[in-house]
Length: 282
Image (cartoon, rainbow, N blue to C red):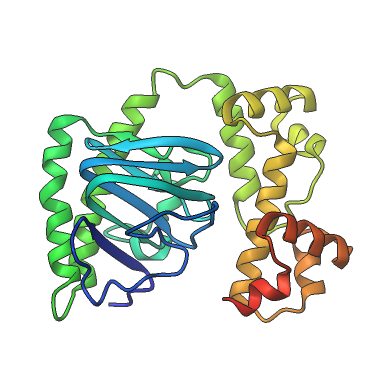
């Protein structure tokens, strides 16, 4: 099994040698000093204790009976652990996509979208059902010859039940405005096209005014459409820097910024390093 696509750690227990630190995934001890972005979807499943995390600029207290899934690219930092036991880890979109169906996990599971809520309140009954599933995944992952298909099967059950609970939780509070917000974010993060478009152009695509789009998106996510556009541009740039050998000027152009110097400044504002430095660390 390629452990670059899946990783799991047991909190409050010595780590298996195969569970070496994966770049961008959460740490099993201590804290992360500043929010960072993982290239894989990260999860927390606590059996006891609490974890305080900053996710997408908001602070969340994670405790038992909750499954937290942090979508790939979402900035997060662990503030502290307090008596935490359970499991944490991560998985890539390709790892879970296509299990039994041809669906892409990003379209199948709402909570994997970068704008979704990271916390899923399982309740005591579902929590009890998921404990042996995580334990079985841990057993397989730490076995001498781990079977990726077995891990995928158990992970699919966990995510599918979580998705049902998530949808039932949010269906009563879903509004027309939330629908507009999700349509905007779907448009912004889909495909590989130029994301650096004016807010007015996105509003036109949705058939609403720019002012209304600003109001809806800010109200639903706490961030303006302009901030989301910039976030999407940087995310696309990170993927291109990590996954291609394209010159920096070409990457800037692909994300819709014609001025390479401006692109470098904006990237450094978000990542704390230049595009060249980021590429060297990949």
